[in-house]
Amino acid sequence: MECLENTNNRGRVLVIDDEGVVGVSCQRILTQIGYHVECQQDPKVGLETAVKGNYDVILLDLVMPELDGIEVLKRIKSNNVTSEVVIVTGYSTVQTAVEAMKIGAADYISKPFTPEELQATVQRVFEQSITAKECADRRANGIITEKGPEGEISTDQQAPEKWDELKQIKGELRDVAVRDIERRFVVDALKRAEGNVSRAAEQVGMQRTNFHALMRKYGLTSKDL
Image 1: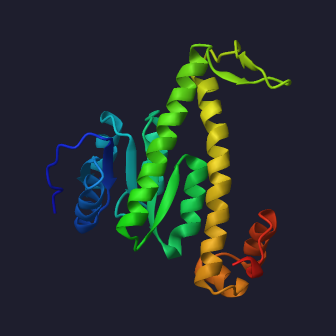
Image 2: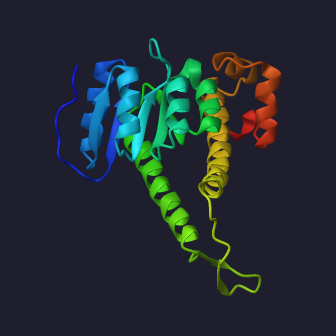
């Protein structure tokens, strides 16, 4: 099933999902708020398209034949593609989606999702991408400003000189996003299990002790829901 043609240009989105109906649905939902959307069902072709194209956001299915989403993500990142990647997953593979965040994914969204959830996720990641690029550009030009110890505005003259240094800056921003996603992952699991920790851990494929460790990490209890 092919995606429909569209001419919106708010931002460019690539959908890589072996289920054609998912690509068409994502396109219809995202074009409503102004995005240009393309889709590929073959993960190998999708990878080539991602590397060659100039996309703002890539929606990447986690479970696909021949080449799974994790491998596609690794290859996208190894090719220094600047597109932000959102992992599309089912509840049973959400834990793997969180691991994908550590590889370089910007966020994840679980199937089935509502149009509002998809639009909000893509918009959030798109805005984060713009902010990160602007931050990197400003640092590269030595003009980024920040609050000094007395509250005055000072100019940072220690701009990074190498690509690896720029990637580190972005990595620091991503670490914050990973923590946010991990916390949301735990909260969502607990809500689906109606506060039952053992059931929540089982549903997401984790040992209870490991799941409980994540709860302690973020200061969460079932009473917080």
